[in-house]
Amino acid sequence: MTVNFGQRPFVYDIDDMIRREREAINESITSTSISNLFSQGDESSLLKELVAQFLAHDGFVETAKAFGDETRAESRALEIDPDVSHPDSSIEEDLDAANRQHIRAAIMDGDVDKAMKRTHAYYPQVLQDRSRIYFRLRCQKFIEMIRQTAELLEVSAAAKHTKPLYSHHDSSMHMDVEHTEMEVDDPKNEVSDWDQMEMEEADTSVQYKEMVDETLRYGQELKQEFQDDPTTDAAFKEIFSLFIYEDPRKSPQAHLLDRASRVPVAEELNSAILVSMGKSSSAAIEVLYQQTEVLVDYLSEEGGAGALINVRNDFLR
Image (tube, rainbow, N blue to C red; front, side, top):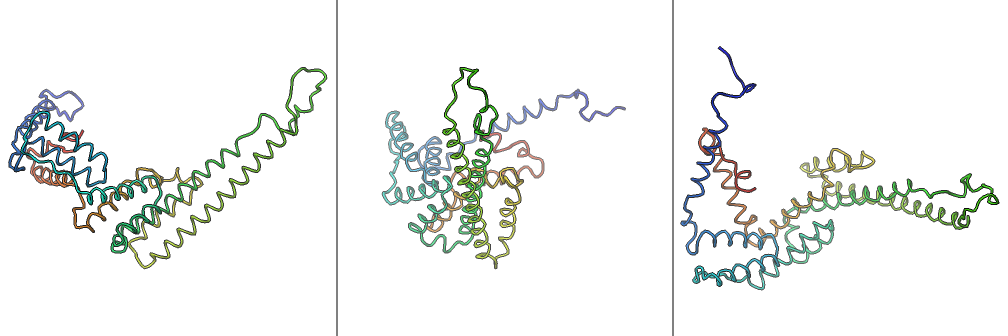
């Protein structure tokens, strides 16, 4: 008796069987009617409504308007379900979406102060009633300050490694000019240029030191403010560890400085604002995806058809 654990091709093509089984399951899913999910219109109308609601929910005002205009124009041109209405958003809803978009844009640009200022102006209760998002915003500002410090360090390092082609100390300046026709610049200008570079380097170094001091001071004040909240200890430990490294962008916690890390902060604040207005914190299409994931996991527990389905890989790519 011999045993084959995959080191040789199997006699029975199990990979092909799994592929065919997945295709059959996907075909069954695709052919399933979802007409009971909407009272009017068709599947295409439902999908467009989900997309439009997602755009409005996340504050993409102009994109949502353009999408709505295109959808209405397409429906009129094709005369699809003329009785289906496409209500325009109200002026109040447009203004709210625009405010949330401006706040989101400020966070994505790294300007946390502007985001918090706009939030206080438009939704004054959000940061007062939700200490978690307030803490995350303050931490994000701390991280942005560390990022700016690291970028200034890079500028300072580049200045130190920038050398002129020759300086007034270069021995080549003592060459016998009577035996050469080479033209050289006035040494006075060279000295002036070199001195100017040294002054700029000194200014950058001073700015770097001042920024480091300011960043540390901000971090210490922030930690002092939340010293009675033990749930913040892990976050402070992770952020302050960036100071251990000369260049925090090369530290194990460098992901904190990634611009992509701004996205979850912006999304959490947007959700908090919506909840404060009595709206859902998640767009309908996000809820639909989350529910589908839970359902598929449940169906796959006993090795059923759900075990061969991956919502993200099979349908979202």
